[in-house]
Amino acid sequence: MRVCILGAGGLGSVFGAALALAGEEVTLIARPAHAEAIRKNGLKLTGIRGDHTIREPLTAVADPKDAQGEFDYLILGVKGKDTDAALEGADCLKDRIKTALSFQNNVVKEEILARWLGDPKRVVGFSTIEAGHLVEPGHVHNGLTIPTTNYVGEMDGTLTPRVQALADAFNRAGMGTKAVTNIRQVLWEKLTQICGAAAWSVSCLAGGKDLYYPDGLVVREGAAHYVQVSRDALAVYKAMGYAPQNFYAPVSKLKELDAVEDFEAAVDMMMELGRGMQAQGYRGTTSMHEDVRRGKKTEVDWIIKPLIDKGLELGVPVPTLTAAYRIIKTLDNYLS
Image (cartoon, rainbow, N blue to C red):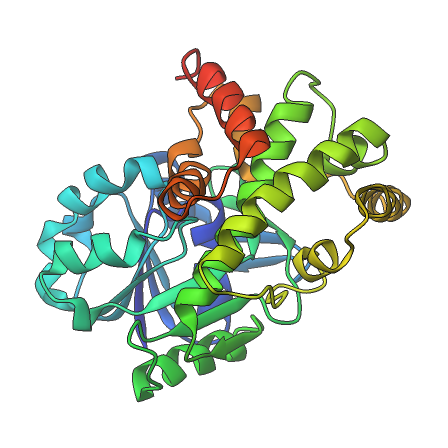
């Protein structure tokens, strides 16, 4: 299998490394410094899958024009706000791609890829909660995985050989992956999960340089804010006709939040989760919070606004989520 990853930063490089270690032929299209470091020294992968340096079968280029041959799959890995520029720069690959997918955090990525390729049948739905960040050019760290970390499916709900082949490849790479018939629900549930987490983490923790996810949950007011934001997002998701499934258990707690009617009991539950994370030494946060820390504009309009807009469409009020969105949009005005 030949795979091209367009936008191979932290997460894209983690995927590329795992696939290459499993024997798949991978081409990474990355920023010049990262691509050059990989060409010189190989791709260094550290973290939960151990420490590796991968040189073959992996190639890194900075310009899509330098990607050689045809590809069974193209994976889009850039931030949502960088999508148009990345795809425009990769027009030279259109006729050499059989199937495209994206692990971006939004619910319009498949539609965007279909427009770019001019054929929705060449696009499959994909969702992941895998985590990776770029330590330095040539070195990525894999900080999170769970038993089922990826879902892949046809947008029309069918199961096809290409979807199963992709799931099999990721499973061989050690990334628990399921081929499913309800990928649209998976995509919306993941957005619901990360929307609440991102809105909460930035609006609660952005003012503290060394504050991490559990630090906000162990404070009662912080846990209460988390419950309110998450319940806003959940209300929209349920109004669409979905019931929470915790596709990304044990990370996801949507079913539990939905099941606990008493507000204070839900707050207690989230505080207990925060204390457990602290006891395990967890020092992570959301990608949106990381963007703010680095002074980078966030994906607030890709991750949070779609649920607010869907709420308006369905007549579901989301006051806490809207307040968090306004806070982050204000911060975004001063980020580069």
